[in-house]
Length: 92
Picture 1 (cartoon, rainbow, N blue to C red):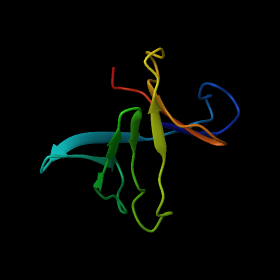
Picture 2: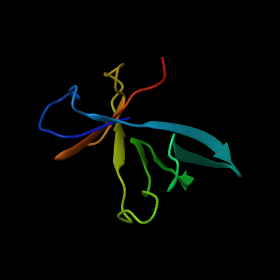
Picture 3: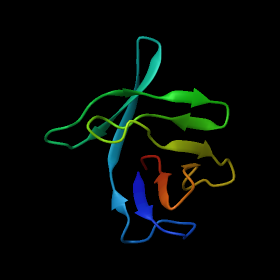
Picture 4: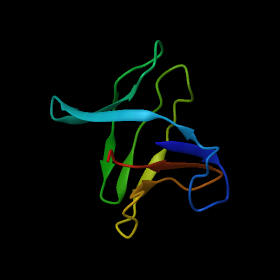
């Protein structure tokens, strides 16, 4: 995942890079940030027909990003829109 405050269509070298993993638990799709020494938590994804959203782990803002699926973008098929952009790239 790349996070950056930008008007650009793609992340730059300055974008913050975070590693996440997604998995199934109790018939739910869950996620967690990988590599944190503290403050990590598991969260449930809310799936939609055009993408997904989730809530950040406390104590961060209770709202979270809303990703939209773009089938025409093979590099970053899930992304957010707005001044704080997030691009999700699959492992290679």
